[in-house]
Length: 260
Image (cartoon, rainbow, N blue to C red; front, side, top):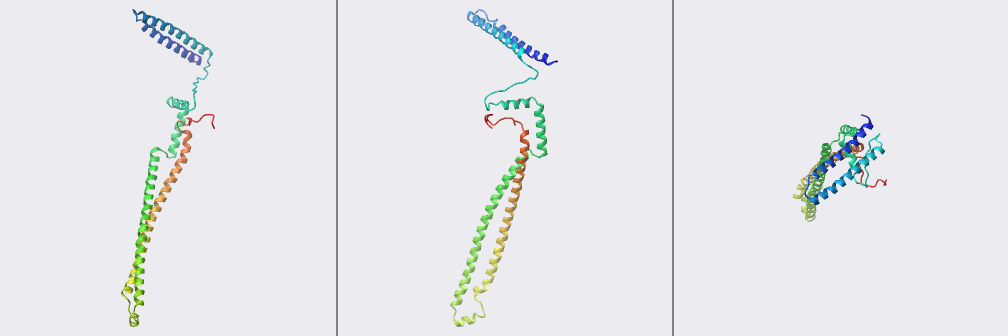
């Protein structure tokens, strides 16, 4: 069927639809009889409807004579943020616009190539959240352990210094004869001093090992978190490639079109 015949058929269908609709109303209205007021109102309504039909047919005839149908075009106009772009985008999607379908296919193919999907993104975000919590907890535990071990180390150091002070005081208080005797023997505190010093050295070594282990775990969590964040940044960078292909890309942000 030619374009001219097709367009003429549209006008004929509209004219027939208007005539049929008005005819139905007039037929139903003619059934009411016996009430003068109602009959008067019906008569007035008929006259209005007839004028409406004549005016509609006249407008259709004028449109048919003046319109150009080489390309069927529908225009939307309205205030900024009135929903023009949203309506156009919805129509394109619902009507299966070929360009829109092609864009959607490109979007799916690129998303698959970049390995981007809602489930993976949600899992990645949850992993980052968990690692942040674990890292924060590990850092708190490390600080608490460090303070505790430092306190115990200071306590043992103070006790060792007290033993040394006791030895010095006792030696100063010895008589000449006792000093000669203790040139060949040791005070009880002196006998215990090497063991206490060794205990402090071993205690410090264990503390360092414990702190190093906690620090290693914290460092491991930090490295893993940085890797996840780097992965998330790569995903966000990849998403910029999808933005031009996403549905609704033509929809504005509410700013006036006159603003740059």
